[in-house]
Length: 141
Length: 141
DNA sequence: GAAATTTAGTTACCTAGGTAATTATATAGG
DNA sequence: CCTATATAATTACCTAGGTAACTAAATTTC
Image (cartoon, rainbow over all chains, first blue to last red; front, side, top):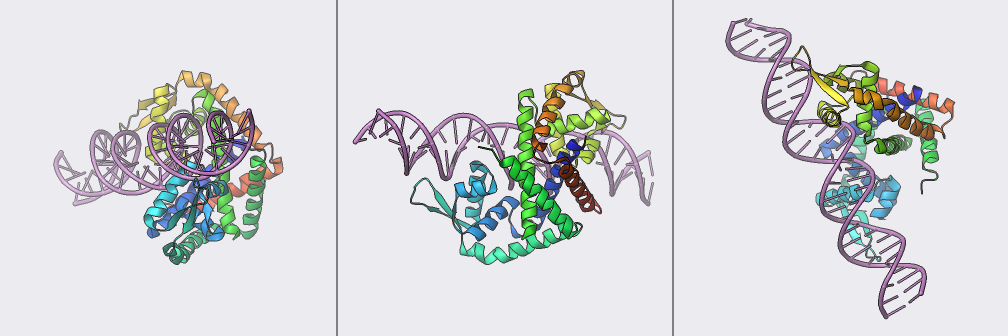
């Protein structure tokens, strides 16, 4: 029953890492899902909600919620597009100012979590996971 | 930024697998969290809720909910223990009768999901993940 | 043995993410 | 041009899992 153990361990690992991320972000008043959006926006600049959903493989409704919370906190703007159905999401100056603090907190926690995983194991793991995920997503619509 | 990719991919993978598990269980009226409990009970027999929580690394409140739903569906019994705070959870005959159907559905989906991952990669992955998780949990509480 | 502390379980409420249904805008077809 | 279809986003509601506060029973401590 190695199959079962594979799925089980992956699930546990994912939950543990998510909890740790939230723990690191808590002092800055952010949650993991919000950080994921901010991180992408910092790299890509302005994106529509649809583009954010596609990039993060998240359905539209939870994305709406996460963005609305970020808007309320003043970290994100929703700019109507030329196509009036779309809303372009951008980081505010306030978010850009705080960004490096957030990034530091997250990086510190990530370092902590990766301390027990040798560099070579990290690379193997990311390769195995990435390739598997790509295979799984191949042929999904 | 390989760190980020590692966490991101693991998160995505976990979500995808969870969704697929739920898809497989939907026709039998079960959810993934319920299946996890049933699976453990089938192997271990009678367990208290605390023991289930410890085994699945889940907090007590979600476990209460999952069990209550299983009770309502008639798949699980809560038997008061000698220690009257405890409740021993057991599968009902109805659950035992359905078990192999559920197991088949889950195994079929798991096979499908693992199709794109060579045996050797499966073993590497489970080893890497398991060891990492153990390291992370070492020294927790 | 009575009072204080610990523990098992529940309740209430939060975020994360999913589906179904709805709304408003764009785009295609006749 | 006008109708039908497709698409972006939202709303409502579901499961999964987390924390905080509570209850009731067991265990320590004095």
